[in-house]
Image (cartoon, rainbow, N blue to C red; front, side, top):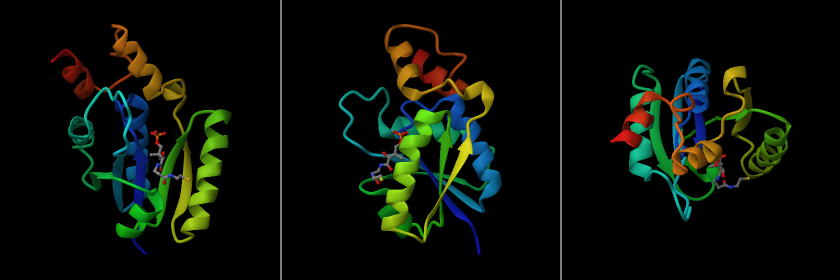
Length: 156
Ligand code: PNS
């Protein structure tokens, strides 16, 4: 059975942690869909189109990775895409608690799609889009935290 995995998230902005997870998840799946949630965040840093562009650039060297967007429930999107795996990164216990809850709820709603947790790499375990967004918004230098493709857009 081919493994079609979804790595869902907000990716606002994509960080080095996301990039690390994408590369590792791409090795586990036959096809990996990085799926950006189109939610109604009041103050996004980047538009969905920009996030998709950046994620495409970041993953251009990985032939089995696709970038897509989704609305609504993740499990409904997983059903539409015939995905059998959801991948989520875990940095710490706080992540684990919320991710475990989501995994159980998603599994109840759609048992055909299994959730797999990947531990964040040690060097990325302190990164979060929320914090990076704050650093950027307040004029800090995020060069150590986000891929080059993101920095270029911030400067441009
Ligand atoms: O990058 P994030 O913000 O941590 O990603 C969270 C995401 C997109 C994975 C989660 O909010 C999600 O799956 N949203 C879609 C709506 C949904 O299915 N909610 C029920 C989860 S039990």
